[in-house]
Length: 80
Image: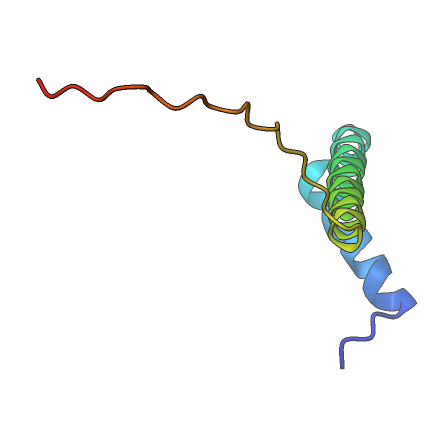
């Protein structure tokens, strides 16, 4: 079950030819090819982002902080 043989592919091709006509098939295949290409580009983009995210995860995080300047104490405190 699920195996498509030559006779099934031939039957599908004949049905497509009858439904769409010989003039629409190249346009249909062009659109199908473009869709597959866009899908593969998106898949590769997601894979690349995941790999870059995993690289960032493996690297130790370094943080830098600005040294606080010394604060001079106030000589007198006044109440308002």
